[in-house]
Image (cartoon, rainbow over all chains, first blue to last red; front, top):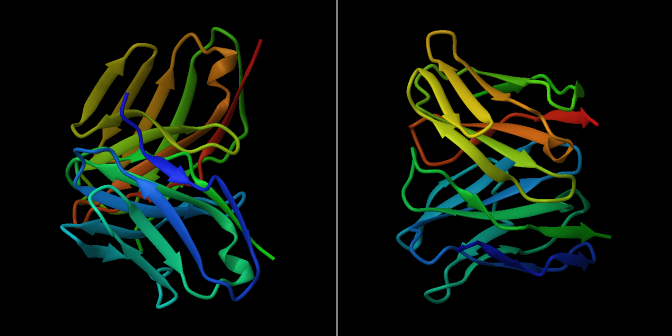
Length: 114
Length: 111
């Protein structure tokens, strides 16, 4: 069964360093998302991406964050200068369409900023 | 602010019983509603989605939607210990393509 894959599964980085989280969405899906979940808290929307551009972003997704689809398969989230409060589980998701279509989540990348 | 509220629980039911999970949402224009299951340390896994008022059944799971009351629920019949997880309600307000999640309800099925 097709699935969203994320790498790495766990990333430890020093405060102020840049990190890139990688995702391979399901191949026939057109909409891609990043969500995060701080330990013990709700899943929060960061950004959605369609047709090679950001279609929607939340207040969390500030100038420190960027997304890119560098080739036909990968979808990346970059955090330019990590802060302690960026420590969270980051989930990539994809869907065929928007709105009514369900999103399928990858297994997540646990980011720990020290 | 579009809110999705869930009773955080924990909810405990004996094996074989019916577990009832509830969710309310604030955006009256919301059109799509999803239930995800999340095991500890794992990613959300889609269980069901519902768009229309009424009930939708899939195996042991039934989703119920009442748009007038802005209420969506998930019933799990014949609960199994493997159903023990956190259940996330997610709502798409139809004004964009993001999902708003509730904080989740922790369910424990006692053997």
